[in-house]
Image (cartoon, rainbow, N blue to C red; front, side, top):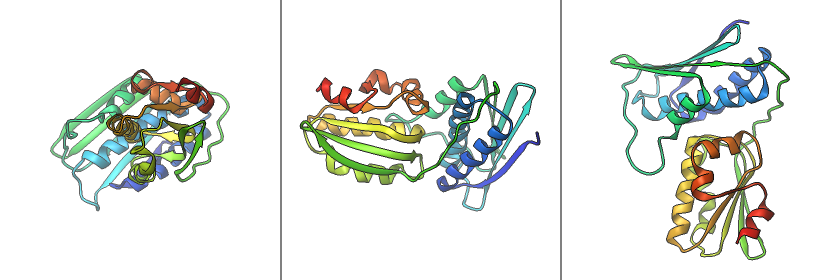
Length: 244
């Protein structure tokens, strides 16, 4: 199969387009669903790192290439901007950790001409998984005195600020809060950071928070980034409400 070659603007809005193109290419190559999920997460984090930290202007592109040799998948993400280290503090910085946990090898080359991220992973082949990207949305309701905020769709760097604003009405209340991610089809490290911010706001208001995510790629991200251990993670809203 021919390699995948993409050129993206240094803009968070292009992340979803890049994931869609990579997913379609992996599906055409017969890569199994679990491997596709993991590769999409790692690839997105590499692209997101370039968007956030390359320091490049809007006319500079992010180049993404992918190829499969036998069972070895190689992805390369490069930018031509000047590398900027992430701002310390908070719960950011999960992106590189996710890449290292989900791929077999991760190499980062930084020089005056830009940054190149190279990742390898041994993949398996099997049935593809249907993917229907949807815009992120937030709806709220009350269940037995507990506020439930259901987030749906794809939550990435491009939409995370809007999602945070839509959660504002339930953050200041001392009532228990369940953040239901069962309708989320994709979650990146910016979305993880939002969850930690929500929990911190809730703590300041004297309210408890539980996170809900069934088995799947989103729950895997939450487990790998420490959300399960730090904030608590349930499989259903009923289970989370019962804990209060």
